[in-house]
Length: 336
Ligand SMILES: O=C(O)CCC(=O)C(=O)O
Image 1 (cartoon, rainbow, N blue to C red):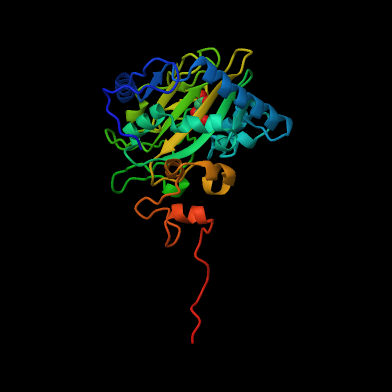
Image 2 (cartoon, rainbow, N blue to C red; image 1 turned 30 degrees about the horizontal axis):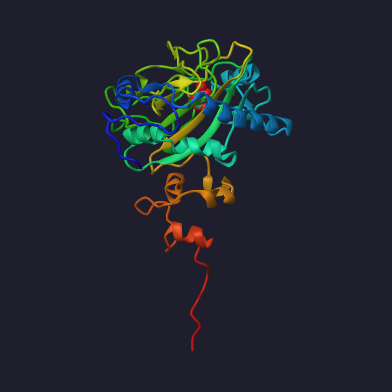
């Protein structure tokens, strides 16, 4: 991953202003997020947005669209809050906001965003030298959608607890929760994940700019996911072409779009090398896309073991990938 220094600014390809990474990092440390303006030029925004919009239209026309945040879904979520919240909220009928997954398969212009220097530099700042892409998707928030329950993107991270105290077992963790889920006061977990949200339209208070709770990355607790939210939030706002970078511990959720125009955001989610990725690239990535990926890009997808985790038998993953022999078969040396 690229090395960087907070005092150095990255000049992105194309005609644009230098990105003030020192400021971005300082904002991030204090608030758990930062907003970086002008990362994409207007022509890049137009090109990426066109690809996203045409893909979204095609997926919808084919009946493949995955839509969430409908009012009936929210009712179901609230009803289920008596017990565990449903994990399958996006599948319930009545969705409004269109989600798209596996954007890596859906155009080079999209793929190129996840390795933009500013994204990798900030991910490395938060996660360290080794990290993975966890997922890359889109969230098109539309009129009629409701606010998403507040959550942490690293909700799966086990909480620390004092000896003898009750705790949620690692396999019992849930994405949304209304149960108390707190570490002892003043005990916080490290950042295990981070998100880069690429704004392809302006993000505003009115059109569902992502709701954030500044500073919540340093709280010992996970949020109460009740909607309406129980704590004050702010909208992340910016012009199309800006990025929101935020810590996986930051309490946040999609805002409610009250305007007639869709709000389009792409979510590039990165995680530490020891965590399960949200998208299963080994199963779901188009082999043609994999063929065209650089070794660096494959590292980011998890094709290279990390201290033996992710190993696939005796050969190095890269060699095997090229050979298209992802296993050593059953075999024996014949006797004389
Ligand atoms: O689209 C957004 O504003 C945020 C989406 C989000 O928080 C999520 O997908 O978990």
